[in-house]
Length: 317
Image 1: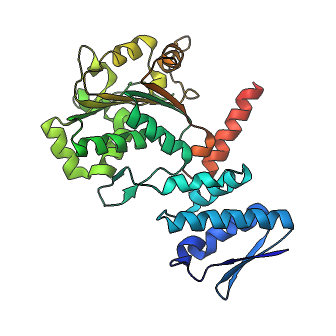
Image 2: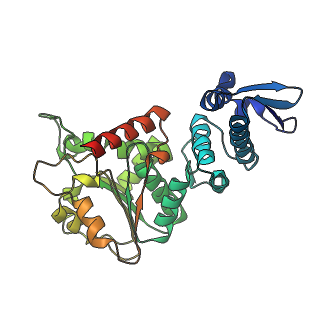
Image 3: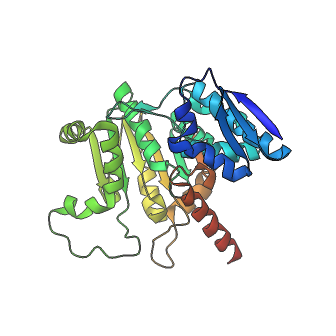
């Protein structure tokens, strides 16, 4: 069975094909087909079902590209998963406006339908809880939404915090003042801010007090007005810490709470404040709880497979 797709009107076939035809090779391997570019056409050869699926993947990627979307390995794998679920029309939702520009001028857009929905929750809810596996962009997108709100002038401060709980290893004695001692815990938040703002702009806002990155203990006793507050690694809070954090919410502020309930590093017997909050707050209006899945993982495609494998192992006990 052979199917043909006209590509002579596509302005950038190299982006569609990928470096050394890497995108086409992913589709070929997935569906056991061969794809050849010749005379302004893509020719897909294989059995009837496989060629039909491969054609749908390619057409969905061509549509995404025509709407200004970028094509990369993650997009290809994601398009394949949507086609297998008969949901490829969802891919068009990812070609809308960007959340914000990075410090290098690159537009930042959601890469999965889940990520787009998460950003809509953040935009429309006062408090958003984003829960899911590593690599789904929970923290990075929250920081992007915070930077966008800050640049638009809708808030005056960005406050990023996380509990200082070690992930199964001891940092030992660290030199320096208290801020330097907790910096290793906060590094992922710094990295996201550097990406959005650049180091010079970031330092300027830190000095002015417009951006604050601090351990969760620093939040006690404060009321945070006109702020965008992000609590990262929230699975490592206790219920008491989570309640303390939530009650810091002031007027004209937003909160985003992110975490992965499969990676709790609390001492044995300690209850996770994130799990507790999801149970207690699930029916409150203006609080959104969004759960990512492995399909929203936007790191190397092997990360998706790793997350799936651990989920299966956990279910088997």
